[in-house]
Length: 91
Image (cartoon, rainbow, N blue to C red; front, side, top):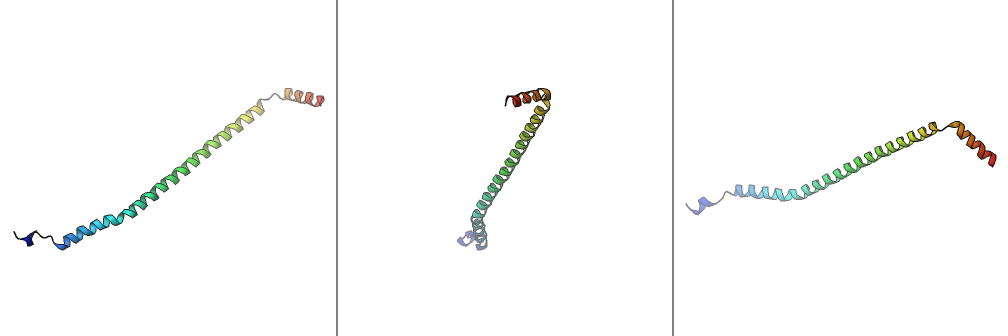
């Protein structure tokens, strides 16, 4: 075996070099993609949290309204009128 039989074809070395350069060149693009994906996930989570808070606030508002109406309907109107009459006579 001579030295010439151990040499690698230049086309093979060019292909290996090009694939290595391609991997290095893709690094910034992959990093940017990862950043955009993280930002998109954060924004989606923020929107989901805002929706959940709005739903919880709506439930509290509805429960408060129901309790207010229940209280109004639960009052004894005759005793309330008597109390108002006493207040007005005192004044």
